[in-house]
Image (cartoon, rainbow, N blue to C red):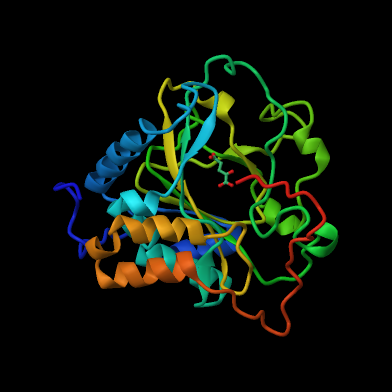
Length: 303
Ligand SMILES: O=C(O)CCC(=O)C(=O)O
């Protein structure tokens, strides 16, 4: 572990009381939770991520792309602490009105490279809502009930700004309770021009978390990263524990187990991380909708 790591006991505190963020989430389906990761931890996470990128084979493209750096919980204690931030998780639990939550894939470090050939382009597609509000998960791809079954918890390791591809979204689109219509993914996204007239960007300083209702229509916008720099973030799809995961989480936990990371974490972090990353499937409550993968339909997953 890096000597510069903050001690496990040192948990950063958001500026305002939890109720402030919860109210924003309830009103807008979106909030920015500040101070989830300290400056020292951000530095460590960047350093550890670039050490991992150097090991990727084949090497990822340097421009015009977004890629994942796998197994973050096996190589960064700071990532383990960030994804188990107690205020962030309390907020998510309160919004979904359940204590029993889990991650539907392992925390996903993503690197959005600077645009080069994409500058000035308007690539098609990318609009989606997040798991479990994916195509082919709900019957009829409609989610009529009022309960919330997914919250996205994206931790900004770099600032999210207009000039480095802060995530595009349609404010309040979670209220429409449907997947983005096909037209959103046709003809490229020009902000302010129909059907993208209401598109905004999620903007936040490094160290904060974008926390939003998974039904929100949104899109990674690599063409907008004109900063010349990478933009790093850790993506997490959080659902009630009875919602089946998007992917098999066991291989990720094997890496975690083999890494000896557990020994470096405070017991509270280790226990929360294990709960989130390794939860066994639980039976759904009796009034829950059927949330299934239809086995014979090819999966179309975007995170
Ligand atoms: O990286 C981004 O800007 C978009 C993230 C995203 O699409 C997601 O978390 O589902």
